[in-house]
Image 1 (spheres, rainbow, N blue to C red):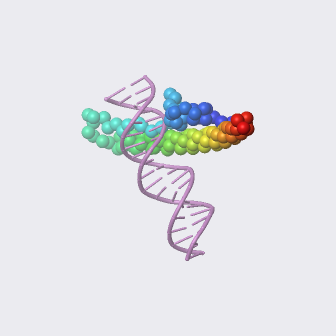
Image 2 (spheres, helix red, strand yellow; image 1 turned 45 degrees about the horizontal axis):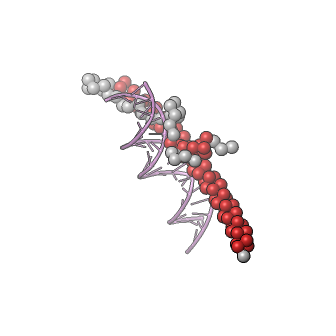
Image 3 (cartoon, chains in turn red, purple, green; image 1 turned 90 degrees about the vertical axis):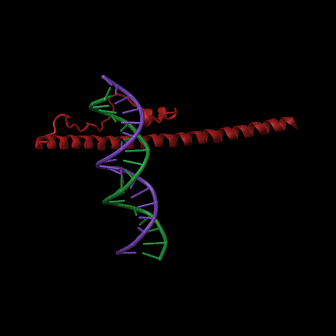
Length: 107
DNA sequence: CCATCCGCGCGTCAAGTACC
DNA sequence: GGTACTTGACGCGCGGATGG
């Protein structure tokens, strides 16, 4: 069973790069030290650390998913190459056969 | 054995892009 | 603009292959 990735693989845009809203997880919870508050109490430090951990965790998973998609995409491309090579071979054979027929007629 | 190489997957960062 | 998401690049550790 080939996924939709394969269908997209026939197009121009790498399927694993196609974006859909709400797909996957990721990083980015921008570290915010509120501009006015120069005091940096321990609670804030904890909060910052927590946010960073969450961000790292999300990005970790996002990277894993990204790699998985990329691998699948490459596999699809390889399959496609195999199919096209076969088609090419068949067409070459066909052409050869037709040429043969044509040559014998010409004689 | 052991040292070295190689391929692979991982975590992280940074830059780019989408979406609000 | 700010936030969320995606992905290329980098460095690291691990396990298997291989030559000495």
